[in-house]
Amino acid sequence: QAQLVESGGGLVQAGGSLRLSCVASGRTFSRYTMGWFRQAPGKEREFVADIGWSGGSTYYGDSVKGRFTISRDNAKNTVYLQMNSLKPEDTAVYYCAARAIGGPNRQATMFGSWGQGTQVTVSS
Image 1 (cartoon, rainbow, N blue to C red):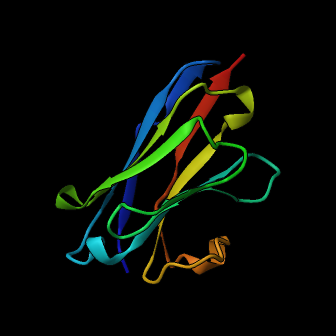
Image 2 (tube, rainbow, N blue to C red):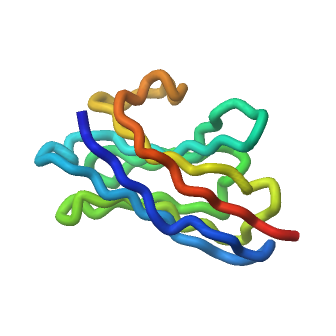
């Protein structure tokens, strides 16, 4: 399984932007579908976005479409989440995740590797 480390979280005002990064260990990063999830206090873990191994296929949760962009750099073993037009309801711990085989089922249980999470707080 991949070891994942997120960074880039912080405090930002509503309407602002942040970019999260997730660095993966291992030589098989380019084979993984990579995803971002988030979890707010008292809520279920929510799918945010994922990206296929080549970067050519991306998918977003309804709540972030048009505002967030997922990308990856396989040469750097890194996946990014650019978050624009942030809202207070985007406040959560954001987790990077990896799965060996992509597919339409984007439940958290389909992802086998997880990072420790990074806090994003959006003030109103």
